[in-house]
Image (cartoon, rainbow, N blue to C red; front, side, top):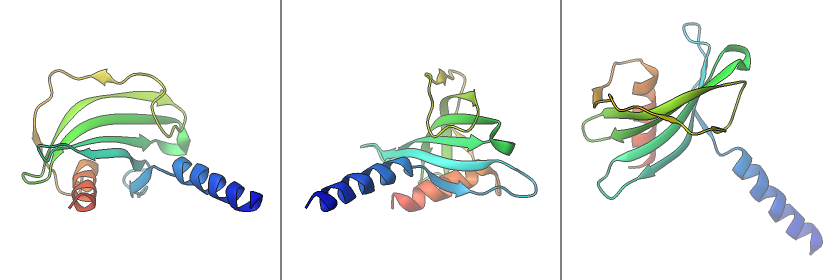
Length: 123
């Protein structure tokens, strides 16, 4: 019985540690690795997504929070920040961006990959 409880506790711990989902791997043109940290669908159908990009040799992590409209295939950046080293989640508050607007996708871009990934996930 103790082994079963320990196994369940450890399984829960490891699944929460691996909660980030990679949606774009490094390539010859971009050495960053891209992850979805969280994605939630609001009552209006708009997704709120927190994503990260871990830079070359784990030197830094950029975090971006954005809204995604799956119907129009557009996104709206809400804020972000950059931190030293590879991080699974932000350790400080994100800077809020007030001059953002809804943006159409550029084919092949990391944001295009992000929108396609989260919209398929939330169908």
